[in-house]
Amino acid sequence: MTTTLPQAPAGDAGPPPAGPSGVRRALALARNTWRALTSMRTALILLFLLAVAALPGALLPQRTPSPNAVDDYLTQHPTLGPFLDELGFFDVFATPWFAAIYLLLFISLIGCLVPRSFEHVRGLRTEPVSVPRNLARLPHHAQSTADDDPDAVVDAARRRLRGWRVAVREEPDGVRTLSAEKGALREVGNLVFHLSLVALLLGVAIGKIFGYEGQVIVMADGSEFCNSGIYAYDSFRPGLDVDGTGLDPFCFTVDDFRATFRPDGQPDSFGANVRYQDADAVQDGDPTWQPHALAVNDPLRVDGERVYLLGHGYAPRFTVTFPNGQQRTGLVQWRPVDQATLLSEGATKIDPPGVTDEAQRRRSQLAITGLFAPTSSGGGLVTSVFPALDNPEVAVDVLRGDLGLDSGRAQSIFTVDQGMIDQGRLVRVARENIKPGGEITLDDGTRVHFDGVENWVSLQVSHDPAQTAVLIAAIALLGGLTLSLTVRRRRFWVRATPALPSTTGGRTVVVLGGLARTDRAGYGEEFGRLAAELAPPRADEVGADGADGAAGRARPDPEVPPDAAEVTDADQDVDRDVDAEPGPDDDGKDDDGR
Image 1 (tube, one colour):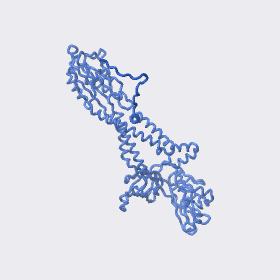
Image 2 (cartoon, rainbow, N blue to C red):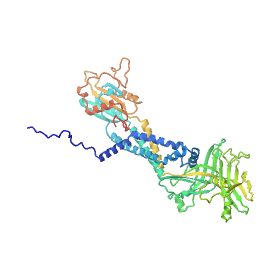
Image 3 (cartoon, rainbow, N blue to C red):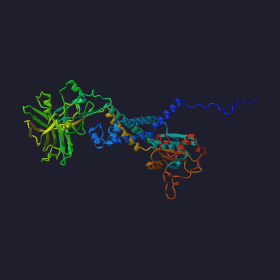
Image 4 (cartoon, rainbow, N blue to C red):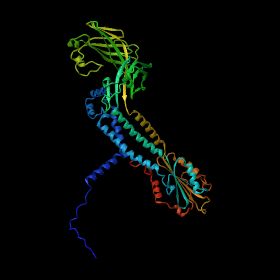
């Protein structure tokens, strides 16, 4: 019986097949994007981009550590400077584009390493791969005959390969095989290196979020500093989650400072004697202070904070005696303008005492500005020839008038407001070079006495809650890198086949094979030693020239039982795997196995 199906009219092919839904396309796009982001190739590209993005931070001044240098660059480059500023090149590490590269690299490394770690753990739990069918095709191979039976040959190989991961298998017709692997620590080191890199990046990010740094100048004459708030610092760089209200209230006092210099003026040693109280002692009112010798690269550690000695300088002390007999003493740090000789500049500003009239007080303010030389060259033009206090002298201008201290504008402690000088509201009334003990008398009888010089120290208080984690991650990173560079991954196989008595006098044909899964350098010697011990050449195998060649030694195969040549499908897969040249693919994994 024949059944005829109805046919569609000509020109009507039916409805088109339904395409993938929007949700399925979105999922496919997300899956492909995730695979591309977490590939090793993308991680390397992002790492390169991060290095390139950090170059402006190394080549150009940055606002965070040196805002004055940024202002000078903008002044010197009026065209290029504003353009670079718009791109964020003067604050690189706080720009959104740098943070985006940093975050993408972080995600890429985690997405790449997590599945790779699980895969490595699974690989460690599996037995070494089966013996390939044709060991003679390997880069390292050898063949010989032995008087022992296959079981004894394999047992001897197992004892010799102690420390290797070994698997012994049986094949038809009494054939025994041994598979051995060594060097799994290389992959462990590789994973430790990359995981430590992630931990290092995470630790740095935590430090930037919850840490802070503050700089302060303290006189080395018993002056005290307390970490009570950001107002106590000369400059303060808080983390993203730091508002300055939860600082640990520890205190320290700088008793003195000492510096030694070489004959050429180069610094030999810096040190300061300090006393400190931790937060508990401060809150309990404990009068006991702990002494500490503060030195460069030897910080004071208290309450998780680190106090570093950054530098030092000099502060001239002036005593001003007004016509009514009242005195005012000014002691303000002057900043070095020449680090080699510590030639310094500054401004000591003094308000007249006892003046109740506001207008009169503003017209009577004094500023002592100029240069200070710790070892003066002498003469009319003062300069410094050595950084130590061997022959101190100061060249000063005494200015009188309105210093602009009440204008509400921020003003540097090292200079006076140039605008006041330009407007004529601040005028120079004296200029002179004086040494300690010297004095200048102004036109109204005011005397300016140069009392002497005090040392000041520049300190930095740093708080980084992840510093221990960063240190551990850095040590682990170096350890993992050392393992990945020194450990060699290699495989070694043994096949022991009973030989037919009609073909050879030996009882067992021993075939060896070796393969370096990473770098072949050095494995030839190790394989040669193993072959010399496990498959030594018999007297009838050595050629007329006496050369046997442990690696790559070949001779006609003796006749073996026909069934011994049969291999399983798994063995053929391993054979094909070995025939291929090992190398990493785009996800960074070995192509010849795990």
